[in-house]
Length: 412
Image 1: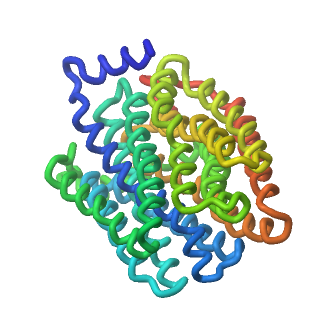
Image 2 (image 1 turned 180 degrees about the vertical axis):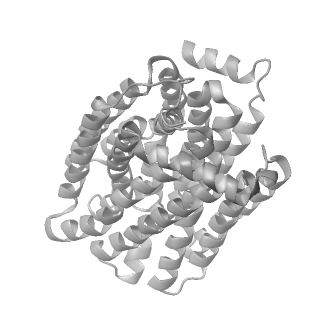
């Protein structure tokens, strides 16, 4: 708590831009996760209506991560070269709203597939401009600032599931999707009116000169051993976190006979702990370094994933997944801050996109393969695969050099 208070004072003290910018960007982040969380809640019922197997349902989410990979590869360099952070934030929100509109009028799996592609573009396009934007605005407290950013994500993940779940007790999933599209367009308008670009590209230097400086920074980034290990660590962490989020609602509906409201409450419970622990983890990592926080989170996460398919009751299951969310989701700002610690400002957008591209690439096959495993041996085996990936991420974190806010980038 002392770390939180000290970081809050520094963030809002003299010479700081205050809490307004990070608060607004965080709400936008929450809006992108609103659509993602809505999809997770609707997916078991979409699969039931269209008669999809676990393999087919998982393949839809594999399409999500493949799209995420290519979007991250493209968006980071474009953000760095254009310096149009706010424009990308607005476009991300508009695409997210359009995705739920498409889902609301979908008549078959093809429409759902298009929705998944648009949601993946929206969610993955948000991160490079938003994280690099906040890292520039709050250089001395980036861990805490980015933890507030992830609180926004957790807030969207927390609110959307029960809203979607309870709407589905009186509406069908198509109508629920249409209603849940509205906040994205509202948030896009607010970002357009309230945020401004921090800087514009150096037109006097010429596009070629800007590109050359960027490519040199990117080359140094790729050559950095610690950064490569961080990318691998984040990919394994993503496999565990996102894999659980894909199969958790399917397990609730098909193995525990949960209805829409139950699914919504359980998915919200995943985010409750992260909502409060994210800022604690970010502020703590600014002081003791990123590695101890990541190791603690991954260790707790691996244990809870192991027990998830072994719990039968809805109440005990909900409590357990809340601990899982507290562990793995609260480390998001720490991973993002570690990325900024290891990289230079010139390539910050690309560094973020590389990390998220690794996450998408390593997670891409898991939903489809996990679906095939579930069709053959049941969902419990799938959860235990994700426990192994979480433990592997912890081993890599153990080998990483520690860092904290204010550290000189290794590849600046």
